[in-house]
Length: 251
Image (tube, rainbow, N blue to C red; front, side):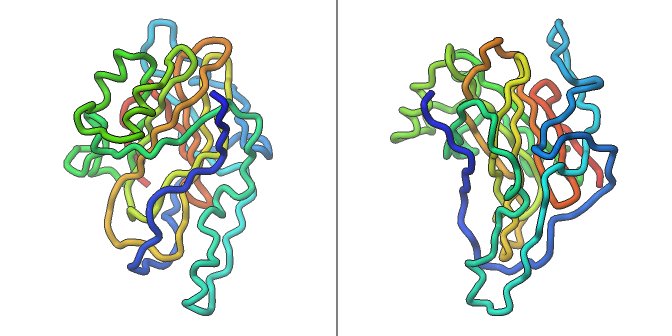
């Protein structure tokens, strides 16, 4: 894969003003250097040999990157100057495997775990990472008859000898908030995604989940699982991985 994209914004900036920052919560002890890399110690560092779930320790940590919220604009006509990416402005973008965020619609994916009608919706927050590692996974995960146009061709053309697809869904809150991805690190046979929520000044007043599909270069040592470190507000980074299913949190 010769594409290397470090920031991907999607979704419109919208109309209904909902002022304020995303919700904070209780913190566990965090670890990580100034670039946002974790020290890798403790349980959850490697996949179990029998393929069972690997629970992340330090589920919620303080973001290691510097975060500087911008000053709210005095003039309503200056809203377009608001930096909605400030949560990840100082997040490192290197070193990184090559990755490509794809504009996949959530309705193209079977059995998304965080649908508004599920039990997980009753939690304050929920997170899920899923891996599509081969052609069989691809056929079982996507509704081929719902996809059309160039993106269908793009997905059909993924070479799973060279890449994996990782699906990330998280919630809940305004549909004006999106994922952005800074880098994907290789930790042996683990791909570690580092990303953050956008923080638009104006937001829809609805409730939805946030959704990403990324094509990621396979690590040279093979592939076991995908781990996600997602900065959700100025005080909280949530960690989860692709062996855990839906992770529900009360905050």
